[in-house]
Length: 119
Image (tube, rainbow, N blue to C red; front, side, top):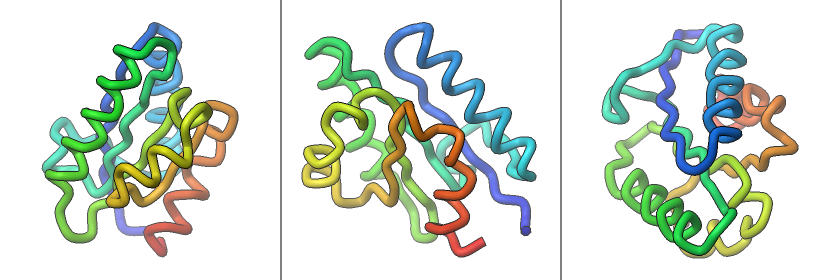
């Protein structure tokens, strides 16, 4: 596999920070590289929070922002607990998202990326 870079945006609680670190370690172990900036990444992962309304709004805004900056060939993935709660709403409101992965599915992130990216 050609080395694909990823960038993770983490929102919400400390658990999301742990989940983001776990996703990063998983992808690094599968041959992906970490990009410091969203513009340098082949894959952008927004680890969302769905705990309180303010966090939900912040997560949706971050997804909209990432979708607005998305360039051709770049994958945008929504991850985390907001995906667990509002998967259909996210997909409907932000159609530029390429994939969704909830907290219970994070171990399958690499498989999802391979499927979406054709790597």
